[in-house]
Image (cartoon, rainbow, N blue to C red; front, top):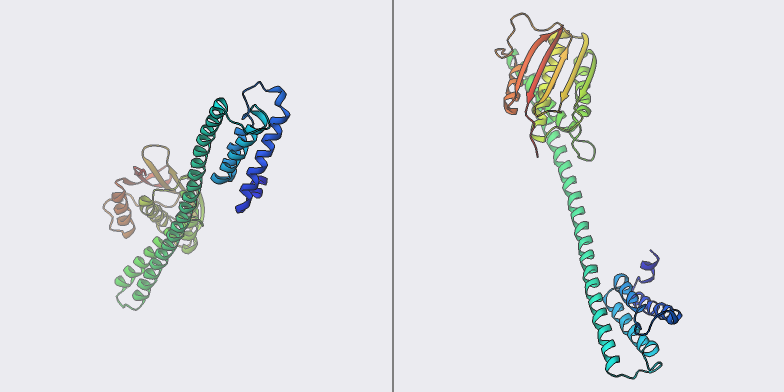
Length: 327
């Protein structure tokens, strides 16, 4: 931080180059008695490298020139003169070659790092913009679905035919349900929410809307659902849950419901269990004309999975098994 503050501005890099040369000269002068003959540039090479890294190309060239002159004048015999002979010329050429290579590679590294930082900043801005657009689109889709559901309900209220009115009301309610699912599938920053998190919200809302007193237990589902499978899986869960409220517990009734999603194997298994009255003897869910069960069968088919309903140890069990998609 202190070095960056020193070289900030156009003149800062050149000041840094001069200071680096002076430090290198002072260190070389102090250690002159420790060095064997023939090492005049030993402390000046690091000065050029450090200047190239922190200050850039032009200040490092200045440091290289000043360091070469200082080493030539003070530490290459004959001392305190700039006389030149073959050995001196050879030493200067060697010095120039080494510092040129150092400056070339370090300046190239600096430019690559700067470009990398710019690319990172640009990608971060693009990612933030993408996430913002995605959340806005997600929000608008949910709102539009909710509006469509409300319009269907409104249209149904003005129809005299009881069956048509009921069908429109059910269609509107389910579209609004899909809108709610869309809202709950992602958290506040747009990341997919774990199944367990949004299942608690959606099921609690469904129980409150039905006026039922339900003891709800949710197990598993720690991972998010695949986007292509989230809506059908959630619809199966909700239809099974609503079936328990309507047929198992009755209007305003109470009972226990256990929902679990096992995501540990190659096949994911969603189970909705309730301790309500259960279906009548001989009930066949595959032949039922109920809209809810028809939706469940359609969702299971869309998932390429299997839906089953059975009575086990006093519990009605709705079970969906399907193969998860992988990104």
